[in-house]
Image 1: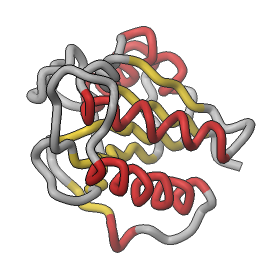
Image 2: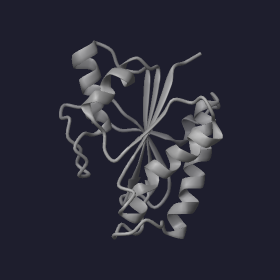
Image 3: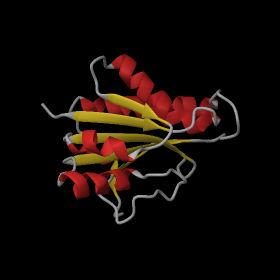
Length: 156
């Protein structure tokens, strides 16, 4: 059995920006025993646990996509994200490689569309629907179903 970690991150006080946290919380409820973390942003301390896993799924909100987007992540040259987060998924993987000499066999970034990121704790109806789609897709991925048709490979 593959050792897996799901990390949902984002700012829950900026409406749809909290979509990654909301999706991860739902996965934790739906899949008791799953290794799920939530955080406002990615931290260097996460690299140790990520390095010990075979599959890592990062979940974040994105204003760059109108639908749920899944991309493969590989270690990056830079640890900082272009989207304003202090550490990117590729940066976490770079730390795994540099510090522990190992990265997960597979790492995915699931981006959930964010339509309204002003101050507040309620999410837009569109983002709530996309969270449902993202949770379903991640559940299939964790169950070992073939989701390869939905995954894009992007060079970092």
